[in-house]
Length: 200
Image (cartoon, rainbow, N blue to C red; front, side):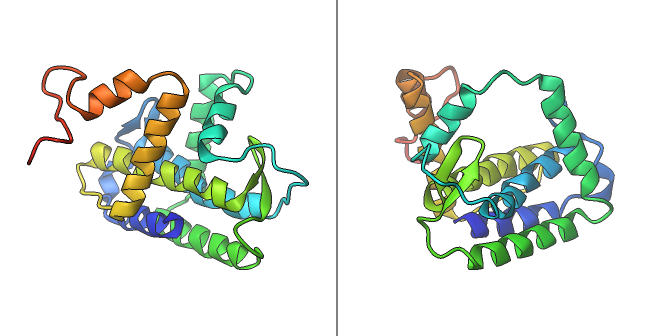
């Protein structure tokens, strides 16, 4: 799911018109910064695989996001600047940057003995099989962000989209938002909302 999602986002990035890179992306990011930030969902896997951890500190993708929520507060300007820098590092060939990142990450994963390999993440030591769903989540979520910003279609693998939706729901429930999450999915979140149970 992770590599399929990386390929799907790369294909999307390849269809971005040359004149769109300075358009609004997400929040304070322009499109280049958003696409650059998204590429980090690929590169961090290769970076973290190179840093084995001695123990497991976080044992689930949900736990990863809950741990991040409790990290010391980081200035929003610093987060924005990191995305801008990631966009700058893509250079004149963002698609080539993505292809190179995928190749490097794929090569790094080939040296991992199994999915129980423990790597170092922002949430501490995690099994690879618990960490990768967070990267799929980032790729799918920001893939849709890029699609909204550009008006381009984004069609990730249905299993990857479903995995992302389930993880988002689990994160919401774990933070005490079960009622609004379920209400939103069932079309009870506000006027015009669509229920997943209504036939299209």
